[in-house]
Length: 329
Image (tube, rainbow, N blue to C red; front, side):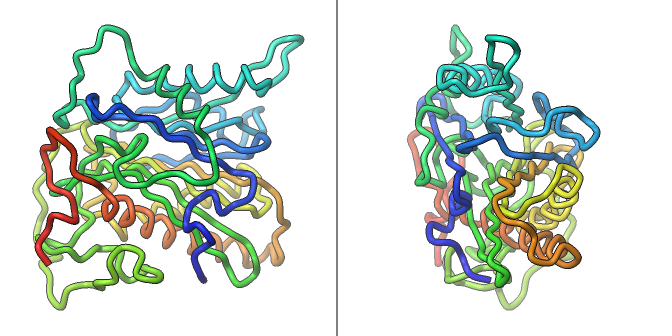
């Protein structure tokens, strides 16, 4: 395995990501869209999710493709970011045709970032406008760290952020991950600069420090956030042709990446979920073994993306937590 050219989810041809954020608000929106609708599925493992239109992603539901996926801050307020994304897509002529009308299909998920030091005293919900800005900004290149939906993200001990990574398999298939790291758990080991995801790191992409010689993995963690205040939401995507049932299995496998990179993960306090996406551009070279390989790639790639999001976070006025770069070597 090797990273793609950008080491971003947009190494999959046809996919684009847009970010929009408000630094005073300490929140934002991230959108994944494509040149054409794509197949998608979702799997939830956290105990406190916040979602919109995810039921239609089940294998037995009618919708075969979606126009975009939205990751947003703002807790339940952030679900309104999908409205802005729908408006931008409709203006571009995208969406399911119903007579002369077009209805863009835009599922979304949110993280809780209402207690991160930002100014939340708004009169009108800011997330529809942020969603519109994000879809209008969609491109192959985009920022990670303190950007988009990761702008106000936090973990147990450090600022979180928006992360992404990609991998090209030996069979030529490409897989990428996009994640908002807003976890109850830690991405780093104890009080060190070492990432739990270190065994899956490629090309020193988040410091190349490896794991520490010793650590207190057996210690019982105490929750640093309350019920509903922590969530890591992610998208894994591939150019391999996969239907919604296969993508559902891919999303399940990708959750292993959260468990590798965040300790603890999938708690009753988190709303952890993973969307899985296929552009369908490449047939599976070996339908018997390739889903297995893609599942492993999804888990390791998501673990890397989580570490990259925390590694890239930048300090900002009013922060309540330090960044990884602030830790002593």
